[in-house]
Amino acid sequence: MLLAAETHHLTRRYGSVQAVRGIDLAVPSGSIYGLLGPNGAGKTTTLRVLLGLVTPTSGTVCLFGDTLDAASRSRLLARVGALIEEPSLYGHLTGRQNLEATRRLRRLPAAAIGRALEIAGLNASQADRRVRTYSQGMRQRLGLGLALLSQPALLILDEPTNGLDPNGYQDLRDVLARLHQEGQTTVIVSSHQLTEVERVATHVGLMRGGQLIRQGPLTHLLQGSTGAVHLRVSAPAQGASALVAAGLGSTVRGDELVLSGAVSDAATATAVRVLVAAGVDVYGVATQAPSLEAVFFAATAEADPHESEPALS
Amino acid sequence: MRSTWSDLSPAVASQAVRLRGSGVAWVALGVPALAIALAALVLSAAEAPSDAGEADAWAEVMQAAFCVWSLMLLPLLTALLAAQVAALEHGARSWKHLFAMPVWKGAHVASMWLAVAGLTALATTALAVGIAVVGTVVSTLRPALEMPAAPVLALAQAAGLVYVCTLPLVGGHLWLSIRWPGVGVGLGVAIAGVLTNVVLLNLGAGVWTPYGLAPSALMQGQSWLAGIGLTVGVAVLVASMWHITRRDAPG
Image 1 (cartoon, chains in turn orange, yellow):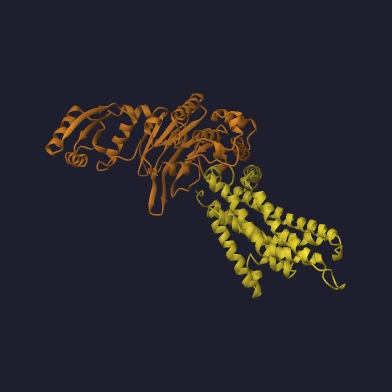
Image 2 (image 1 turned 90 degrees about the vertical axis):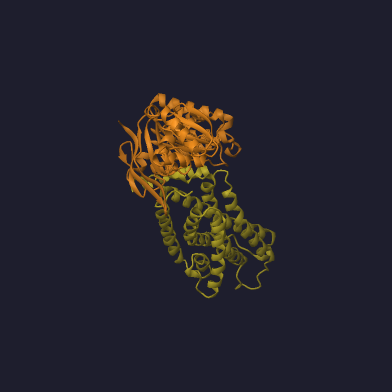
């Protein structure tokens, strides 16, 4: 399998904080790879390392099969476009001038600007307005246009849905789907919004606490999941402790306990009995179809059954 | 070094676009206007020469304007311009965008240095031209001053000397402004430097500070200090590029 991006035992430490802990990322060429996890999971640091913005404490990064280092940096980054966190736009310049500044840096032909404006969905009048007058959605679309200006072989998007309205989500999904169909561009998209990414990703890496806890083709990950069982209870924390004592992993979500992984009917019945015996009232039991969210919670529970649910949306 | 200096051209071309409409050129032209106004004031108050040995009005006005310029206005202007050029990237949070480009990171620093150095040159040229124009106008209005034609060569020499001696400040303040966003740190350092320099100049040691190089060269006629200015200016630029490119992207 050809890999567009890969890391080997990648670690990055900020003082005493280990932001990324020995991850081995493998992003197949032509895929849309969703790098998912709660805030603080290490997604942005990982992407910054892939772009050479942050130096790894240890480990290596390879793009298109070549190690990213000082000697190969410019050659490899010429094939990479990126939108990291919010778009980097100059408010005093027009949209077209923002594109022009990047076009000159990348030594691209003038025609690249028209193509980028088309991707960004900006007409001539909007393109000639100062960016400080743009809405958040327009800024995000222009940022995407900037990232795609060079028709990169690898597109790295960090939380690209931030600030987008539902139409913006749809537009972004359409662009990513088109890139995937054309097959020329590999996309790495990070997000804490699992359901959004689930709709476009072909491959997924799940991060938590700086570690890559699972990765692979989305279909494979979903096949390995049997969904989740949600138990609405009177005392979730107490119930979670009782379940742990009985050898059942769960995560707390508000007033619910979520049993994830391969949850059989017998396991569900056992969980209810354990909760009732522990004095926790069970108000309702609901099953959830397999989803990326369920995969994530199952992987998290396996990694640490004592952890409560991370902040995901 | 293959992808180093060849990256300077696109970096400068991009920098030129980013500076459009940012207002830095107006700052570069506005600050010398203060020194030119001082020159006009000096000339309007000047008395007609009483004997042949007395210094002419041109010398008087050049000394007043260039002293204020090199001692105070130019260091503050350099700090302000460096802060403004760096603020374009801090404000847009675009360091990560710039440093992810297939361009040597040092080329971005060098292009910013060229922008600040170019704007400083524009300001110094504007000062020299402004003094010449004001002097010519005043000599027409007040023939009693017996002012000869504008001493273009002397003006150019003074402007050039002051400019080259200021190059260490260009690199130093650009580095400060890249490391610390906002005008506060750069201007604070410049104000402290100017005040310290006034004290040191009175003690005869002003030449040993970057803020004292230009006024010392001008007031004591030590044009060899231009060589020091150029050498230290280039060294500070190289050190800034070395430091910034080895760090994680700012912001």
